[in-house]
Length: 336
Length: 233
Image 1 (cartoon, chains in turn blue, yellow):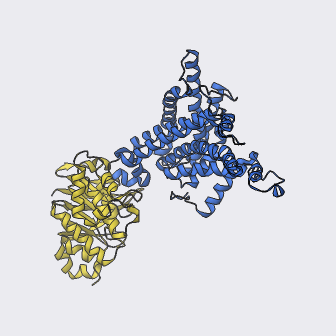
Image 2 (cartoon, each protein chain N blue to C red):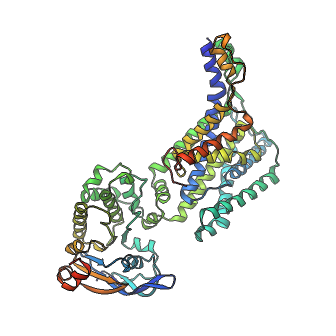
Image 3 (cartoon, each protein chain N blue to C red):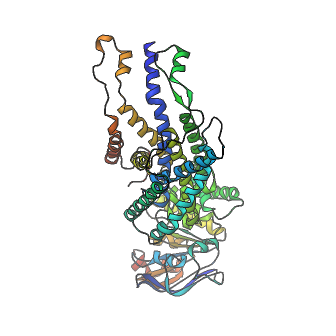
């Protein structure tokens, strides 16, 4: 019984949140890695692009709610998602045409691109705060829990409860669908293969007749979809606050680099690795050991590796360890 | 002549690397461009591809002046190029490399790929392997096959045998002879001058950016002065 309780405890506090957070990071990291692979720079505006997309989704959600439209048990935001994606694509293409294209044609070095993307980050950040404000916004509606802790306890007779929020299930399912579609596109379709070819060897892609303008356009479209989906899922699961999206840039970049930058599958695994490290290392294991150990050995401290306040330090530490020992990532990526 | 470059002069940043160079190649012919290091062999090839801008001279394909046409559009007209380095997609499978070669064409890709597999049997065996994991000689075969996928009339090779063993070199030259049989004009830059001339119909020897000698392959091989200066005795 104690053993089962301890397992449920870990599932409830580490595995379920880890899968959810990991999915959100994975989607974000795939976006960053695609930009790096095709356009060859680290896009610091990515977090705020996610915030922008989510903001549009929230605005449309509010509009739909005011018209009395809902999605039944599911959050209304899912209906608003396509509109958010379209706006995000428009914004990405706008910045590409007005800013990035100029530096691309000048063949500027990657550092210039990073600084340019920082500028766009500030612009997007300001736009989002001006339109929707800096405060916390909860836009989740529909059915909140698939399984409540209390219900689980009654159902199983265990001491520990297992709560599963519907946003967690939605996150997982959406991530699986999005990634399946993306990897099918990249590996099986002609256009997807040409994107990989361009990322692998730009000059040879030109010699094969692949049109770089089309590849760049396509990359921004895909990346905007990923950013809006990841941002909306994160906002539904937690809440929407523009600053959190900026903050999430660190774990997203860590996931990207851990997975081997430019390698989408690596970014996917990297997202989960960072998410689970962050959650597992900030969790207090006192109760877990209480179940498993005899009373005399009961731990006196919280057995928490690091306080949750320092969770970003974990991404940072992993990032540095990987850069020192495996600069091209755990999965093969480009050397930075 | 099917493909000809006449009196090319050009270079980088105002300095002419090639001066008044001319090359001609006909369908079903192998022509080699030889010469010492720094003679401008690869630059001449880039000039013919439109990668390098010319100060003077013109490039004709089947009578059509293509001097002003962009590199990418020259590919569509039937000129294909195998660079010396970075000439395959290392992260893609062998088959995907071939598919990318045929990017501009929609029909009969599978037939074309089968044709390549007949020409380069080893690629059929390795078709699902990541190209970057292949040996040097196999990578060169992928590179050449990728270039042939564009259905070229003119195939340009920049040092196809650089860095491979003599045995592999023989094998690659054999493949190039088979390509010639398909009525394709083959133009190649080579370091292995003697072996290249042996399979070439004609050759050009470039010295400091200028045409120094030209002639039939066996003629250049036999000429005492040329042997002494460029072919190592």
